[in-house]
Image (spheres, rainbow, N blue to C red):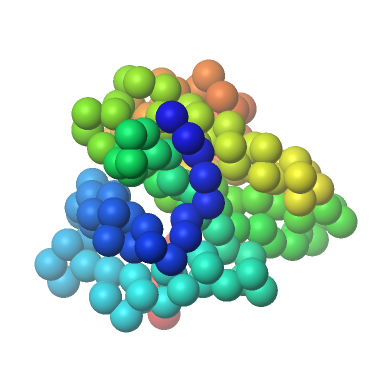
Length: 149
């Protein structure tokens, strides 16, 4: 299995993974991510001036999973933080170490960028993912609040 950055030709293989991730989090119907947002997000991954990045797990020419992450500043440290925004693997790849490999690849990229930490969120009902995350990171105890504008 190869973990690598996306390239422009990956869009057609990446898009079904992105759709699967959005379906998992019920971003469908009226809550669907608009195509314009998907296209803009994809363009950001390919723009070296953007702090957003995408990696994929590839095996035998087939994409098995994706991870998206971004770097941002913080008020309590000089080094950047790395936010792991999205992680998804195909159903058949689950339990095969793909998610772990993608997270660890983000750890490596964050270290190379001089980041202070990598952090992420998951839904409280996603027990399967939490079983993996509990092995790879410390649970912060913070509760996320949000308000749509």
